[in-house]
Amino acid sequence: MKSLHFEGFSSLAHFLVFILLMLFLVFAGNPLVVVQSGFVGVKRTLGKIDPVPLREGLHLRIPLLQTVEKIEIRTRAVEFTKEKQNPISSLSKDGLPVNMDVAVLYRVDANKAPELIREYGPDYEEKIIKQIVRTSVRDAIAEMESSVVYQERQKLQEKIKREVSEQLTRRYLILEDVLIRDIRLPESVVKAIEEKRKAYEEAQRMQFLLEKEKLEAERKKVEAQGIAEANRIIAGSLTREYLMWKFIENIQEYARSQNNTIILLPYDTRMTPIINVPQGGKR
Image 1 (cartoon, rainbow, N blue to C red):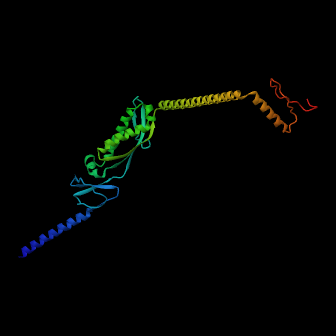
Image 2 (cartoon, helix red, strand yellow; image 1 turned 60 degrees about the vertical axis):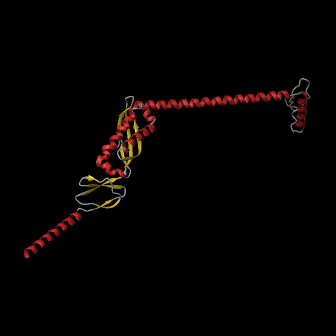
Image 3 (cartoon, one colour; image 1 turned 180 degrees about the vertical axis):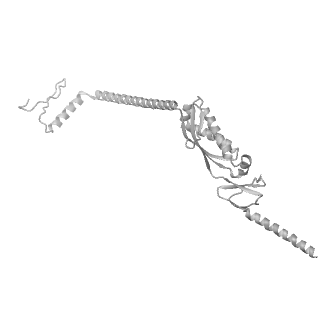
């Protein structure tokens, strides 16, 4: 009886020790996981990834058996710039080197975060984004002349954006924008572009002057036609009776005037003009 009692007590002690050990492992391994705002959690159970992401908040896990990796789902920026010593270099269609500073804004598709980690791992940015952006930029530049690259910057940016967006979407990433910060061309190309721009501006200025002169000539022509037409009408109305009436009207006007240095003489049949006669004693 004592032996049975001792064996029962020993089994109970072992069970309690096991329970205490498990509780110690559970709490020592921190079973609580907090997923902050702007992140999702990717849970692994014995290495297998759970397809359902953990949203922000408090979650439970089994220590030693389950791990939770936090993936940022806020907008992130990847820069390829001269300052970071990683600009994108490529050859244009005419074989000239083009250096470009580019910034890419993207975010992880929260619902697809587990698939992203399973297929590409936590260093997806290095494996996917940087490779895709560099390839898309180089392919776009290779299809354009070096002089056109600078002049059609917006068109180039949109082309790169479409290609990168398509590639990232297939890999559980969402592209928000592609920004071309700077384009550096060979000095000879820059000089040629500047000369072409100046020539274009000069041509535009000359065109403006020609249009201005043309409009001025048209204005003078219309003005001359108006004057000619007015003279024709006036000439048609200058009858002898009208001139006589106008002459009499002028005499009346001068008579009322304080100016006595002018003497009006009657005109003859040849319409002798008015003669100014100086005052007496003056020549």
